Amino acid sequence: MTLIMKPDLEHARGWSDVFTDAMPEMPVRDWSAPGDKADIEFAFVWAPEPGALREFPNLKCIFSIGAGVDHLLKDPDLPDGVPIVRMVEPELTQGMSEYVTMHVLRYHREVPALEQQQRDKVWHELIAPTAPSRKVGILGFGVLGQDCARVLHALKFDLASWSRTPKQVDGVQSFHGADGLDPFLARTEILVCLLPLTAETEGILNRDLFAKLPRGAALINAGRGGHQVEADILEALDNGQLSGATLDVFRTEPLPTDSPFWTHPKVTLTPHIASVTQQVSAIEQVVANIRRVQSGEAPLNTVDRKLGY
Ligand code: NDP
Ligand code: OXD
Image 1 (cartoon, helix red, strand yellow):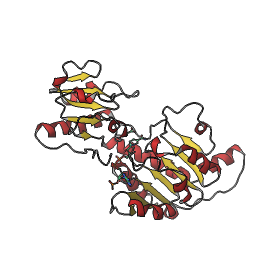
Image 2 (tube, rainbow, N blue to C red):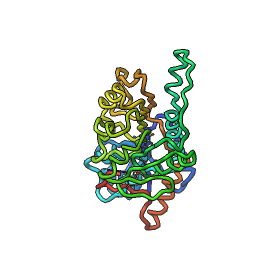
Image 3 (cartoon, rainbow, N blue to C red):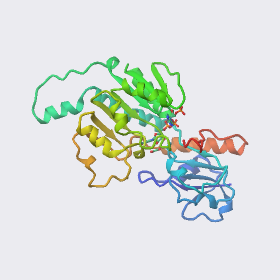
Image 4 (cartoon, rainbow, N blue to C red):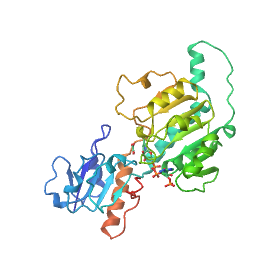
């Protein structure tokens, strides 16, 4: 009964100490020194090398350190039948709601235009409407999208969501499936993407989608870079179909220094930090799930490998 770790996070240190504090009876091994691979029953990973997880013959559960599992599912040799648990933890959720709310408010109150006026020393009263007149749409309405909506609803924004299946959430107009996308886009002035990256959502943020938004809409993408057709974002910014874009994720990360996004006047970019898994809270979720598996129950927050999230 051993857990192996490969967290791969540059901002975090000491995951195994945090785990040992929470579950002292479970030995922990580092990825670089796995010992007898037959001992390993649990793996806590971000991006293991393709095929590596299959080498643990007694693996009972794989824990993803991230909420998104697209990179894990790319492994064609993932061990069959081993449940994959994605990260659902309150502080990760809280962080995303803070990020999304900050950038929604920024576009809503026309902060980019006001900052430009300040640079140009222009005193012009730019009056924004109040939140009930601002239509925000959230693409992907799972754990993160729903928590963002809870906060934005408290601020009284006019909210809609788009998901695969219909939802009933107070104060949020639900759209779903292929048929729901166009009417959702037609009413959305600030578009937030919190979709998982799957075969169906790859490249969804493209020219056709932008054309269905009201002219001058703003985009906030904290999903995955693979959702973006990056040339189409630049085109839509340059021709005014999009008034601004906040991008936390990119097709290539770290973003190459010659990327036009770095200096584009209508782009706000952040280095994939919209929200970050927090150690103590994350390990609490992992330990709770290990205890479930040990007592014969199915773990919570498992990924549907066919759906890809
Ligand atoms: P969830 O699995 O809880 O939610 C996913 C949502 O997307 C669900 O509402 C789901 O619909 C919807 N969805 C999936 N596929 C489709 C589709 N084909 N058409 C329409 N809707 C679809 O995920 P989370 O909310 O926890 O996380 C979302 C993503 O956020 C992660 O996958 C990750 O990529 C990203 N993320 C980014 C971070 C960052 O720092 N930038 C940090 C953490 C996460 P339904 O409800 O019907 O199943
Ligand atoms: C995640 C991320 O998926 O940090 O959790 O991107």
